[in-house]
Amino acid sequence: MNMKKNIAIIMGGYSSEYEISLKSGQVVFEVLDRTKYNCYKIHIFKDKWVYVDMDDNEFPVNKNDFSVIVQNQKITFDCVFNAIHGTPGEDGYMQGFFELLGIPHTSCGMYQAALTFNKRDCLSTLKPYGIKTATSYFVNLGDTIDEDAIINKVGLPCFVKANKAGSSFGVSKVYKKEELQHALEVAFNEDDEVIIESFLDGTEVSVGVITYKGEVKVLPITEIISDNDFFDYKAKYLGESKEITPARLTKEQEDKVNAVAKKVYEALKMTGFSRSEYIFKDGEPHLLEVNTVPGLTKASILPQQAAAAGISLQELFGNAIEESLS
Image (cartoon, rainbow, N blue to C red; front, side):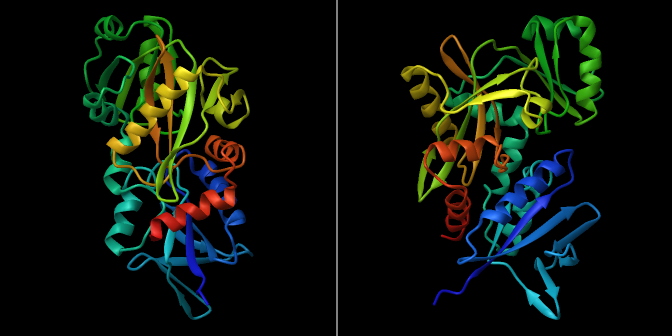
């Protein structure tokens, strides 16, 4: 008789994305197979790390060994399911913490998380592998802003993005030189580093790559058509976009983006979930960014892609746990 495994589902986080994370974590909690796993919802916030039971009672987490005490019983965890978008779940902090404690977790390693969370560093790392990206210009808080140099390099319209923020927080599309300053202020509100990128006018796709049953698997591709100016927060979470899975690509486009997505996953030595955004320019997929803790709600892209591949949410999430335990 196999003992059931104790699974801590961590959710929340310290960033603007915490509400989405709580939804993702709740979905994971609801769908995991109860014949295999005892599931515990753990809220991770700056001011408290707590286990939340079915009646919303909160029990503090002991950070020395990541345990909780409930009714004089000490509970420890066999595996942590990471559903935190943004910091500290997507940028390497939680990964490092669990790796120090020797507790398996479902996300990629600490270095991979930190690297992919930093858009500038991630794109720079992938350049030698021949991965195409938009033309970019880097600015740090306190730098002298040379607007002409920026526009000469990236052109107009361009995107101004916070370097280390998710869910399109701190992103603006800039059409005129006069709008640049305000866009930088918006981005610097989220991060002290900014990346300014040329606008790629083409089909945008989102590609999920996961390790499934021991193999790297590229999921069916999603095409993103935003009702807004670009795929911003509202488009992502308030339904102001159309997502078409599988994407309407030619066989050649599909093969190209599949190959690039797999190459990126393997070059970065990724494990667990990943979802990357690409835009086709001159028939070639250009990488925008890599997410290592993608949304896991029913409406989220990765679960839609898994469904298109015939993988249920229970299989998708259960596989992540089994992979991390193996």
